Image (cartoon, rainbow, N blue to C red; front, top):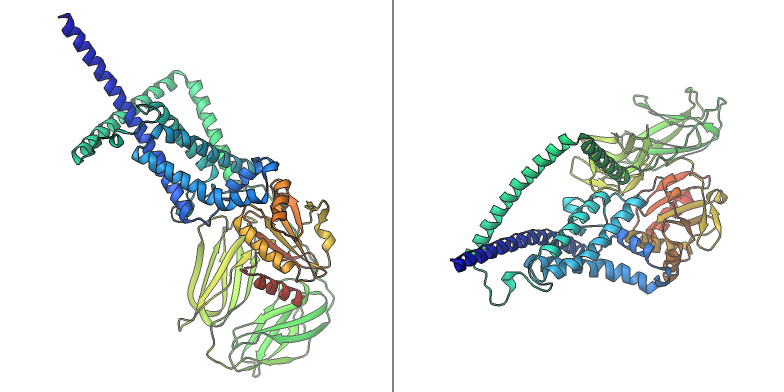
Length: 586
């Protein structure tokens, strides 16, 4: 009798141990699947999109790596070997091993330093600010499914870290043991797989029941201790608000004012010329001896057609486009003052005869009516449709406005823009025959046409640089950071033209955004750069110019007025052509 009792007790004890082991195995398996799938998606996305180098990762490593280790060889290793190749393949291998159950406890331990590195990178991005997305967490897949913010990525990394610890604690067997289906002599047939799936389903249902019971218990405890519950809720709300603030809110930037008074005296007009003649338009230019708001009155010989074009601001150098004309026709014009008094004698020009020519977009202008609203206009050489695609380079999404009306003068109001942000836009027009014209990408900003904010920064050679000391010559500012692949590519093109453009006509300043001086110096020396590099360690000047995406270029004229932002170029010759055109027009 005693023996049977002992045997039953041993059997019951063995069943309890088996049940506990099965539960531990299910928990470990669920954690392994989640981490494995995440690492596989993340790693394959970075391998396929190998050109998308996550700059925050390199920036984070370079800022915490001791200066003694920062050499050209180290920089090359970080940029071209470690970040784009070693880390993604490590993720793929670890993810695959966890999914198939090969040494899961060892793989979880190896995941810990990788997850801690990801967490450190995201915490660095949040503290530094200026990063709207995580460090290319999922590589090329982010183009199709969107990206996480640094705060969201940090929370996800914390969840993965917790699951890795769960695998280490709950995985049955020894440290170097694999799952049963990989053990020698074990076979995984369909019947066993179906049985395992049914068991796993029951366990999930039981887990749901236990979760509901736990939530009910938490509700009862909250009613018993309302002060503790309210305090906990307030703390959570503060943490969420702090994360949203760190991820999305940027410091305000002072605005420039424009208070130019219109002179009352009658201006003297000189140097009247007609250019850019087409079938339907002509550009008329002239000079006045003092700032004046002027108009052009253009009319046909029999005065059956009269059009008046008026400037918006008082200037001394005038240029107005007269559009909506008829091809092969002679028109007469004269220049009028603001009160419609004639300032010039009658002049004439003839539009070009109608020919079969490509559809062309010209005279693109952008004017801001408020900090968040802008008007964009352009002209086509024959009636065509209108379409504007515009976007903030910080985000993937693009907005489009369009009209199917055929016209030669095109106007769109762009509303609800981000205040003081730099936008990029591209224009498309299509005529009745289906001929389409597409403009190059151009930047829009309230800063264009205004005085460039002055600044003083330390240069990499030990001196100081003040923008206002360059008054009298044109200046090109290149906001960049050495961890950004696009920045390095553009800076190499700037270096090519640096020695070809006369220094007395154009000054070039490469403004490095944040970063350690010793690392920047090592990179510049390793690349043999001679372009003047100045340091903006706190990104104060970048904020003054509303720079949130890198690289960003500003071209400032000899009066200190911002004339162009982010011109589109893919070669040194194209950049040199843009600058030469601006200098020639001056």
